[in-house]
Amino acid sequence: MSQVLETGGARPPFGRRLAALAAVAAARLVARLPPRRIRAVLRLVSRGARPATRAEALRARQDVTATSTLCAGRHCLQRSLATALLCRTGGSWPTWCSGVRTSPFAAHAWVEAEGDRVGEPEDTAVYRAMVRVPPPGGRGGG
Image (tube, rainbow, N blue to C red; front, top):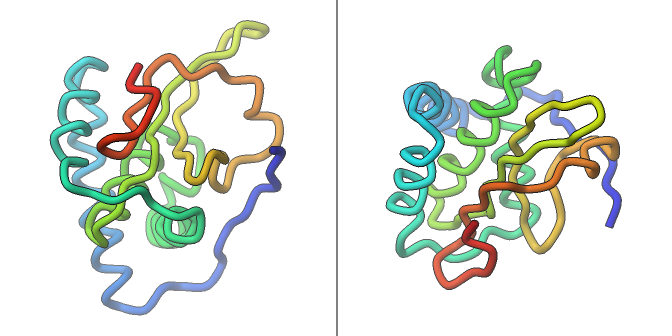
């Protein structure tokens, strides 16, 4: 299913903004790890979570992008990690993905919920997931 870029321009309330800042800080640390370690950390953190709904994942992404100018920009790895981690604070977990496109070669990271990429522009549909960390019991563990 194609998806239109959805962003939240409104500043989240203080409590959600504080949670988003904590998720962004944690994501910054996780993003510095090698890919296999990132996957291991995310699998550990996602334990016990229920699958995130699209609305939960979108709200987390909007809170992250409204709170962090880096995540609102081109830092897709930190943005996707922060989105997943913020979802986890609410008890849910989206499918975290990292992948590539071949022409021209580029890498990208994103989250999915209910089978759709969340908040991503349509042109990111050309990226093929190489690493996936689904909710516990989910499919596509990559």
